[in-house]
Amino acid sequence: MLKYLSFVAKNISKNAVTIADVFLIYTILAPIILNMIGSIVNLQENQIRTFFVLLGPGLISLILYVKNFGLDFVKENRSMIIVVSCLTIIIFASSIKNWNFEYSRESFKFFLAYCLFGFNLGVVSKISIGRAWNFFSIWFIFILGFLLICFLTFQFLEIKKSDFRLPGDNSARTAALFYFFSFCILIKSTLSIKVTAKLLYGAIFILCVYIGIISMSRSAMVLYFFLLLIFILFQIIQNRSKFNIISLVSIPIAVSVIFFTAWFGFADKKFKTTILSIISLPKQTIAYVFEDSQTAYGKVNRFPTWRDAISKFMDNPIFGIGYGSEYYNDAGNYIRRHPHSILLQFLAETGVIGLGTFLIFIGMVFRKAVLNYRKLQNSSDKLIYLLYPMSFVFFLLFSFFHFAIHENYFFWYFAGMIAGFDAENSGVSQTAV
Image (cartoon, rainbow, N blue to C red; front, side):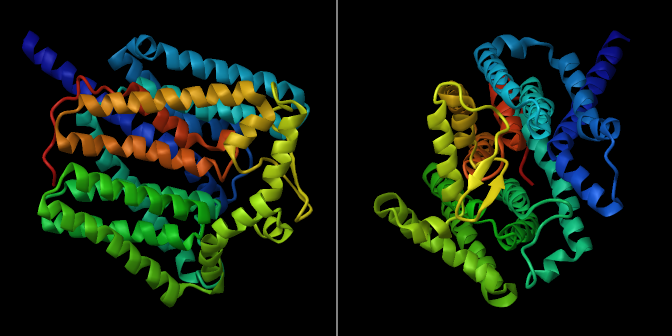
């Protein structure tokens, strides 16, 4: 009888963790999902409803994780939690300077509710390798749902008119999201043994990359191709079997076919202009930095905003000018709410103290990522784990060119999952399908 009760308790505990894992992934995607729902049914602002849609499942997930894994994560990640707490205090103290501005208040609230909450939820999840395999199945369901939305909106068919974006979202976040989706599918495809499974994942991979490309985010495109190349080279070095090398070499070939399909078949002049601007960016950067070319200064719309951010940093280099400040683009004569670079935003708004604390945090996450990787023995387990540091690096680098501090919540979730990753009690790996 006692054995039966123990078996039932274990099954209930396992199911509870699975539910928590689903809610975790939902919570990561919740702001995008809420934006899409709002654009379709025209929701009016309602803070209570927004709270439950955004964070309700995440809070349930947090409770289930704490109940199953306890609070050991606090002791295991004490140093990192202290650094994150200090960074939060710095941002709050900095935001007081601009507290009379609604944007500053809302930005700080979203940072607490999503970035800080996301980090802590990721840490307490204590993801193991066994659960990391299951996470791919959960991500796969959400990816199919987002692809279905793309088809239902028919926006991807109108690429000749404008860049693609999910309903209620912007093209940059759409591009980053689908490039991330492609990383998930790529790793799942690499681990698959059956040819039919590889073909299925390959088709979905192509769709995700294609949507990322036609979203026409220059930063996301360049960073994605860079990390994809690093991933391929790293896997070839790690596993030199002929089958693996052929499989990996086929990836850039497939991506090239997708790219040229978009170039010659479906894209308009704007797409080609975007690609040409990427190619000319190094030359324009050199011309502005070393020759002070005003032509290059006007062509790259980030330069004027970044220069204003640096100017604001010089006004108060220690403590910054205050969280939630505005930035002036003198080339275009307009105001931006953030400099489109979290590094420059930390520097300008929280000074050397805020940026230094943030860089310490990044270093600690990288250190934990390497330690986790070294503890794993199985090559398949290592490949499964790579999704987390790859995603962390991708969203970190992407934030150097896009979004405000409080908008970069993907980065915080993956930082938390790396910090809380249970590499020592990784469980039994599953067989690739």
